[in-house]
Length: 281
Image (cartoon, rainbow, N blue to C red):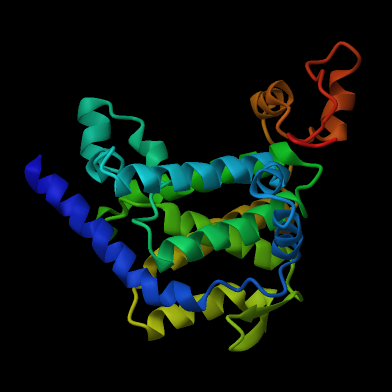
């Protein structure tokens, strides 16, 4: 296990170093309405800004930051957080199936840029396309996570033990498909339309010497979801969130349950909340 721990540490450091330069170019915050709105809210105070973030993206971002803090101050060894299928199957350490999505690395420029990407495109989707469809947003994240876990299991040669990168890239890709004409400035160097944004990021990563595979896995996962939910009419209904997702959103009051689901439930249905976001009026 000592060798595995050293390998996990080395992989985490290589992963952070590989992306540090790349991420300084790919923040792409200009032209993103969600960031402009949040910066305005931040001027009223950090607590108010934090409470205005949509619930699911806020939870994911908070988990990433908390994991980084825990790793940085040696509260937890990253070896116990990375995706190790041998540990999952032989020792039933199933938490690894979740924690591998929260690992960014230590405090660094890469960490800051990754948090900005989560904010831009997670908040952008949850407050935009999925504003009144919180179960659909959560189900998209679950679908993406399961797809990436399956890729990691099926392709062990790629050593996908940290899945935060491709997961965030999936969010970016889905955002780009829904906002294809949105102009985005990448660090003020050049502008691209949303449709080309993932490919611009991928090219920059490759120019800086990074491997394209994690980004490509994120693109594949995002496109698979977009194809099944938007492009192929035969699979749209099958991709609707199951009842337990609607019940979870209603129970936690984490967002808006779709009106069609409420109507299907009727007066005696499961939904009792007002569909109000956490921190809303």
